[in-house]
Length: 276
Ligand SMILES: Cc1cc2nc3c(=O)[nH]c(=O)nc-3n(C[C@H](O)[C@H](O)[C@H](O)COP(=O)(O)OP(=O)(O)OC[C@H]3O[C@@H](n4cnc5c(N)ncnc54)[C@H](O)[C@@H]3O)c2cc1C
Image 1 (spheres, rainbow, N blue to C red):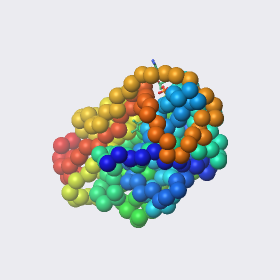
Image 2: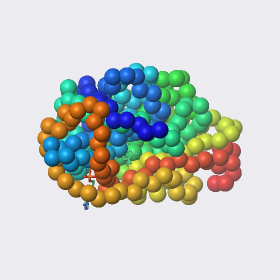
Image 3: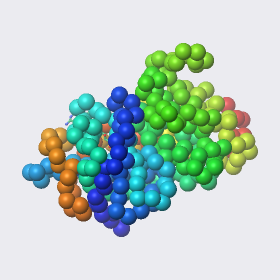
Image 4: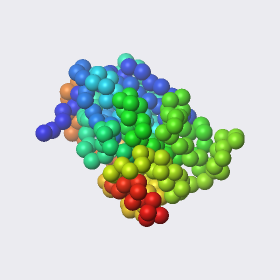
């Protein structure tokens, strides 16, 4: 079944970090996404050129008409610069979704989430869901950031389920010196999950380099579900966010960012401990 394009009104824009903004979008009808899914945002230029990019839903499913996307601005990126620099509340975007079935979590089984950069976005939806339904004990999130200023959702994300790993500069008094994410960071989170649970799923999302390192930290297996990029580049014209609702964007799903999100079965906590 094809998923139609629909209009989404930008109701609010929030700055998360110097390079990331969250866009709160409203649809005409309630949306029922599952944590981990994404929407495709489509833009159209007056000459008919179109560009579309995928963005993970950051908000937890709540049965309402609104949801949030968090977008990292790439200085030379086509769509992310448009969203950051041109789009304002009241604008209308075209979106298609929710999409994705293999990188989702419904808060019913234990999960270790490991994210870097904008890869934390779908994992935040999972964390928010866990907290909203009172299942925080089922989830542990390890998020890797360069410096404290790079932490998305800083006012909200911190909690007993979350470990923040700083790669370049740690906050004063931090017991962990700055450094890349490693097996001990993930093992610590895994070890805290409900002892004796039958299985734990690992969710990894970030750049290719990050995903490989995080997968190795999970147990040496690669994350599944790579999203290889494709190269097409054209300039968009400011103002095109107000395209006609329901119109089809025939265009390209262009992306060059090597980013991967994947999930893997990690076995029971007991098995993992024995393997180490
Ligand atoms: C399922 C999924 C979920 C995602 N979720 C998120 C999310 O939640 N938040 C988020 O910020 N991103 C997310 N992304 C990434 C997002 O879709 C875009 O790839 C990202 O925003 C960059 O798009 P852009 O148009 O700004 O950059 P692009 O214009 O696509 O450029 C990206 C990079 O590629 C380079 N490039 C482009 N064209 C060429 C070329 N011809 N030759 C050489 N280099 C080139 C650019 O210089 C730039 O560095 C997700 C991707 C997927 C697949």
